[in-house]
Amino acid sequence: RKGMSDTALRTADSGYSVPDEWFDVSQELSIREVDCCEGQAEIPGMVVKAFMDGKETIEGLKDRITGRYSCEDIYDKDGNMIVKHNHMITPSRAAKILSVGVNAQGEPIEEVKIRTILTCRSHVGICAKCYGANMATGEAVQVGEAVGIIAAQSIGEPGTQLTMRTFHSGGVAGDDITQGLPRVEELFEARKPKGLAIIAEFGGKAEIRDTKKKREVVITNEETGESKAY
Image (cartoon, rainbow, N blue to C red):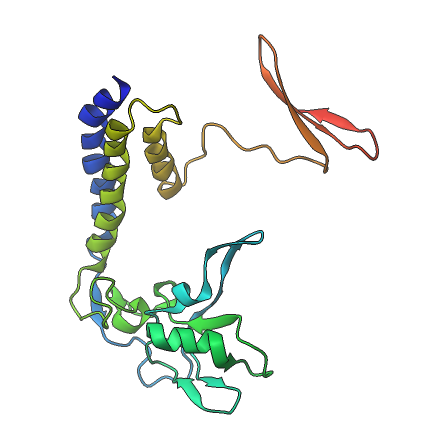
């Protein structure tokens, strides 16, 4: 029953109201020029490395640099150039950078400086080289491409699919999948989440105690015996 009502009611909510606001703020964001730094000696960019959560790799360096333009020349240990500055890092070049590329100290490459829209110097819209490759074709994006609208659609469409999936898994026990969509809205609108995460004042063992009136999280330091309830 919950799955059927969510499919009927929340699909329109995710498919319309969420992206609609994003279209308003992103519709003017398009590719206006090829290179915002043409003729300039210094190319602004951002240094990226593999995105990790502890020991788990969320997104590898190869995925993060593929389709981007390099800010610097990248060489292998023999001095052969793999990628020239201001040129696109293709999937094959990205694989070569990770396998044989070395930094200025001669060590294997763990981070790469790439061009990004966050450092684009275009006065209106963004430039093609700071945006990178067209995600649909893998080729360089063309001037005039409405990348802002594409970005809004790319976030809104999976949100609708997320809601639709409750219908298919309606009889299976699990978390309410529609709750993920309001959280995405909170992130984009920089709202404070309803249930703020607790940051412990000291390290120790966490224990959850449920009483009739409230739920407490008790942190106990086994070395000092100190404990505190939140």
